[in-house]
Length: 156
Image 1: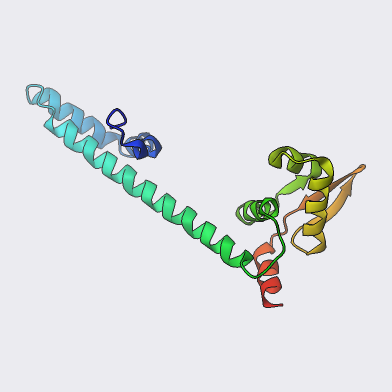
Image 2 (image 1 turned 180 degrees about the vertical axis):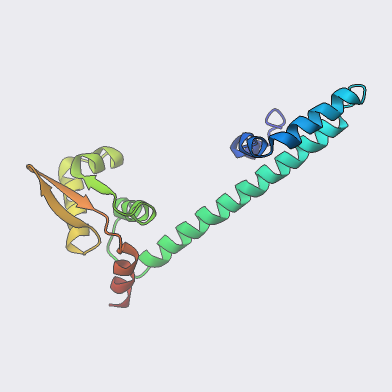
């Protein structure tokens, strides 16, 4: 399928499905051996596996699209967050209790230290992240109630 430029097949995973139903795979293989090498059973089984893998990919893509839509909904109302800050908020929504440092943010966004520092301090001032000091460095944490905080900001 990849050779014929069905590029989406690059993202389907059949190994998990086969591993979950080993006996069906073995049975399809056994039918081929006992029916004079007729591959029909095996091919039908593999087509079913591919169909299930495509269904799984569709579910995954729907879930990710819903996450993106929800993030956009939470950030829609005129917040003055830039695209870097919005990306960090989206990450924090998917990974509650994550911690971020200025250095990590600087490298992740390919910005200078002061830009990273200002972006994170602004998020902390807005109540989106919490700020704490570890040694001489600041660490910014994503609160578990981030979605609630964002919804509160939207209502203001």
